[in-house]
Length: 99
Image (cartoon, rainbow, N blue to C red; front, side, top):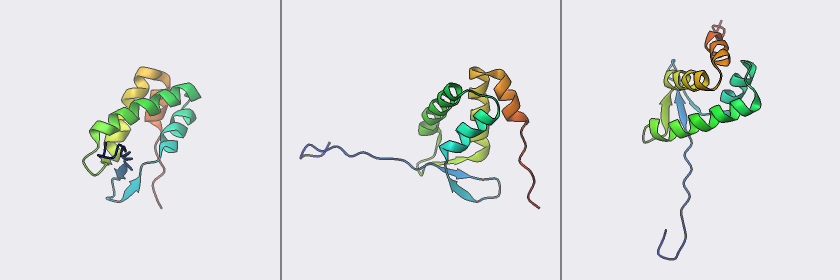
């Protein structure tokens, strides 16, 4: 709180460090749609998003950066606790290789 009684609200924009070295803004919709496309219900996807958000707040470096691999591992870990069948489907998905 400032001396005049105001609070500062800080928002962190998480950044994803991709395998190829590029950096992207974190996109919650990719986590949620990936879970739903793997068979999760909306409730399960929301639970996943909440768990990942809590983890990101401590796992990201001081600049809000996280490696895509670490995020992928965490999503699978959380999905296994929420719905093992969905986790298996999510883990089996492979992005097509760029041409």
